[in-house]
Length: 265
Image (cartoon, rainbow, N blue to C red; front, side, top):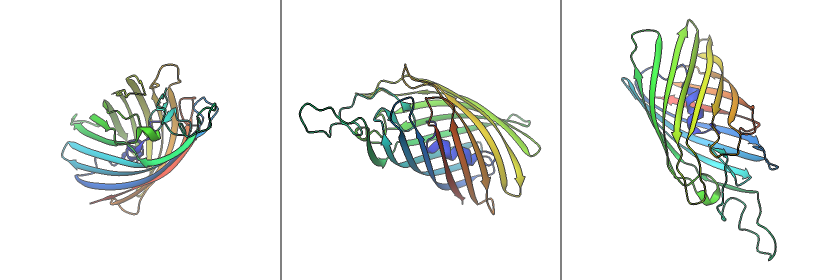
């Protein structure tokens, strides 16, 4: 899924990412469920811990989730369905009776992959905002548990946004070079998103976004999903966001949702 720690943190940042310099720390709770075109339902619970530091035109982010995944070992957090030949993968290699086959479903938990990014906000001299981002995913997740690929990823993104009174329209495109491991062969993927958010009161806003991403492996459907979100807080320092997602293709979870919180210093 694009439903990753960075995805959750990114939703929370819409409309406030350029509010000022300083450090933000956050935590979230994200849950998704879907069969990804298979006969097995995979459930993913993520608790991402995030940090963001903004200074001038630069914003730096880091996110590390704790994960619990139950279901198909060919479904990986952040990617969806892939061909995973790891014989020790989630739910595999546990059957000791001769002549039987290994399980094709199981549960595992642990630390996920570390996500890092650096964003430069271009001063256009007008109402249009432009962000250029470089990002890296470092393989800190256990590939034998099916919590990651066991390889590093690197990507770039371009995001545009413009406010029209209380309404902000945003969209972006990106590309990620996915790393291959001994058991998982994946391709580079392109992604795109667009959406709108609107202030509905002091410190509150609602919005919706559509997200598309190429499948990580050939033979699987692209990801396609829509997310609605509500952001609120008693003050600019403490912010909450609720969101819910519906999958529009077999490459996405059927549904998901979560809550995130950040505190500014």
